[in-house]
Every structure is written in structure tokens, then in C-alpha cells.
Length: 580
Image (cartoon, one colour):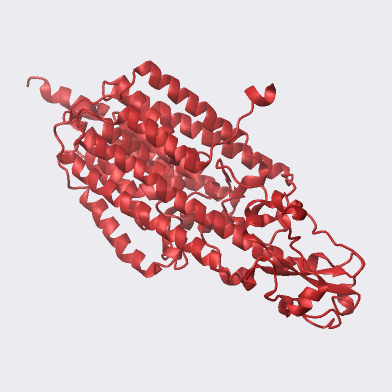
């Protein structure tokens, strides 16, 4: 009974894309006003999902090909007997061993359990010694043949012509059957971090299969697709200050129903974070962009369903984490849960307090939890934590000091929010700019002092990493490492800086609505030159984009009216008001 009522399996990403898309249309699409900006916004949000699926599927296929090649390369090493002396220089394989060619079928890679019963298909998958000699494989009496030259292409197989990349040569005694050993994931020669960041080098593993190149092409197409959709989103955000008429378009569900859906989604998503296994804990390491050193030590909590037997290998034994890894894993999980909780509550409170519409705030929070991106990237602390800090800086905009502290913390953690400073200083220019600047500088100073604990040498390196004081990388990941020349990032960076400076002067005067939309525009534009998977950090602008979609007219929320004057300014005004 427990397997029926208490069993839960994470939905496949593609399945969730369809379910969430239909649910989003049903809850937020304005059916009585088909040609409306709201429907265009909903369409843009839904259209981001295919690009994410293409990128992640390309990475999964790339990892499968890399592990397949690594397994093939390690078979000759794995079957050496325990008593074999590697330093003796004796020939391997010995004369009483036979080279056996194994044909790896694509179906076996995807369904390894089907290959356990070869008699069901009529093909055992192994070619006999005689067949091996007929197909051009090295004979057993040639013990000096190197393992690299022992792979060949069979011509008389019952399964038809097979590419040479799908043929693996194994060594087994003439009178015995050698089973392939189980492989520990830590002993695998695959750099999972590089695959997750899209920085795998085919020369590192000698991968030459067509599937590897098709996986890279799929990733590149996914990144390009994301850039196209995000370009449209950026254009929409730049046009938002010109949209003065903003009719009230609430979700097609009551506030209570939205609360129920959002709480249920949050519980299931955070449950995925809590129950993630050590097998799918991937250390981010140096694959992140510029930012605080702490962010580079946190592991990624992968919440997408993954295969336990990639590349057709046998299920791997879950490695035990040492105490240090367990602590960092626990910290990452807690930070991810708290960050998403802060995002959801921040959206609701902004809608209730600053928009005067609780239903719009709950609807925006529910839509955030419903989107496929949130389900796929729930465990990414470097995605969610900066977004939460930026969101609460918006919520506390009437307190320039507090907003400066939150924005400075976000900028110190992931570097890119530093480019929001011209926009925010311009917003507070007539009142509150000094308090805001003090908050930003004080927070950055505290973060820098914390970096000095590790010593002077590491302090300089961490400081340069924190503020991005280095040349633009020429071996980036993402689309810039999948065919696009990194040199073209330079004009994109120049255009991005011009846009940030432009926001210091336009629009004028700035109100809360333009502050939200322009902040989202800056973080969206940062995706195009982000050298470490730009286009995937959607959380940096997604909550602000949702607030832009659901916000009312906020032209009266300017800093001069809503921000309290400092004590010194109030005292001067009182002295000036006294009669002479």
C-alpha cells in the first residue's frame, strides 16, 4: 500500500513542460482579449522551455558518449588480473587470452536492463573468436598488439553494418568468461563538472563519434534558441516604460486556489532538493563566472531525473561523502530552499504592499513555481540566491540603506548585479543616493574583509575573482564554447556597458515601475555575454519580469515622494521653515 500512496517519482522534464504550459495558459491567458500584451508575455515565458530542454538533452547525450568512450578505453585496463605486474614489462594480453569484439547497440545504451537477456533477442552481443578473426580483429596469437589497434568493424554481424565507434574489444581467457566490473563514479575518467558546464574537450577523451558532435550541435541550437527568446524579452522590457495604460488583468483563479497550487508546488520542489542523492551532487568548482569564493564551493543540487546507468554501464555504487562534502551539501540545500522561499514570499509581499493587489502577487509567485525552468534549476544556489536578494532590494526600496546592503550582497556574490548601480543611483539621485551608496560600499567591504581570512595570497586572487578583474576568457562555455568565436563577446560587452550607462539617464524621472523593468532588462542583457552558460541564469531576471508583467501604473512611486528624508536633511528643512 505504501508503494501506491506514498511513492513519488520526479516527472520527466518534457512531460512537465507540457503540463505546466497548459496550466499556465488556463490560469493566466486572457481569453476575452486575445490580442493583448499579457498574452504575449505568457507566450514568451512558455517559449523559453524548449531551449532549456535542448540544452540539457544535449548535455545528457554528450555525457553518455563521453562515458561510453571512457568505458571502452578502460576495458583493457580493467581486465588485467590482480597479480599482474605492471612494472615487469610483460606483454598484455598473454597468449592464452583471446580478444573478443563486442558490438554496442544503441538500444543497449538506453535500456541496459534489456541486454541482460541476450537469448530473448537472438543475438548475444558477443562475437566468437572465429568471427572476430573473420571480421578483421587481431588474432589471439599476436600478443604484442596494442589495445588501441584492437578495435575493428565487423562485417558479418547479424545486426547489420555497425560504425567502428560502436565496437569495443575486450580481453578474456580462452576457457573463462570475464564479467565487466562495476565502476565507481569517482574512478570514472569523466569530468562531470565540465560536462555540466558545457566545457568538455573531445580531444581529452578522444571522442570522435557522430553522436558526440550531434549532442554539441543540439546544445548550440538550444542556446541560440534561448538567446532569440531572451532578445524578445529584452525588447519587451525596454518598451515597458512607454506602456502607461495598464489594465487590471487578474489570473483566472481565486486567491485561495492560487495559494493552494503555489504551496503544493513549493513543497514538491523543495522535497526534490532535500531528497537529492550524492550520485547527482556535482561540484561547480571554477566553472562559475566571477563572484564570491563561497559560491564556488557549493555543490549543485540536481533536481532533474537522471539515469543511474549512463552509457549503458552497470548501475554505479553511490559514493559516500566525507564530512566536509556533507557539510557543504547541507549548506547548499538550505540556501537553495531559503532562496526560493524568499523569492516566493517577496513576490507576494511586493504585490500586496507596493501594487495594492494581493491576487496579482500570489498569481506571479504561482507562475514562478509553475514554469519548467524553476523545476529544472531548483537546486542551483547561484541562480536563486542573487534573485532573492535583488527581489528584496526592490521590496525595501523605501529604505535606501537596506536596499544598498541587499544589492551589494548580490553583487558581491555573483558580480553581475554591479552593473545595476548606475540605474539604482539614478533612481535615488534626488533623495537617498548617499544612504544607498553607503549600504553598497559597506557590504562589499565586509565581504572583502571576510576573504582576507584565508591569507594574503588567496585574498588577492579571490578579490580579483569577486570583481571580475581579469581579461575576458577565450575558452568559455555555453554557446561561446560551442562554435561561436569568443572574440565576438567583446562587442557584446561594450554594448552591455553602454546600455547600463544609458539607464542612468533614461527614463527620467524614474519610478518603481521603471526600476523593476530596467533592472530586469540589465540582468537579461547580461546573459548574452555571460561566459559560463549565459542564457541559463533565467532566475536573475525572471522574478523581476513577472513583477513587470503584473504591475499596475506606478508613476507616482518616485524616490522624492516615497523615500524618507535623512535626519540631517529634515533638520535643515525645519531650520529653513522657521521665521527669521
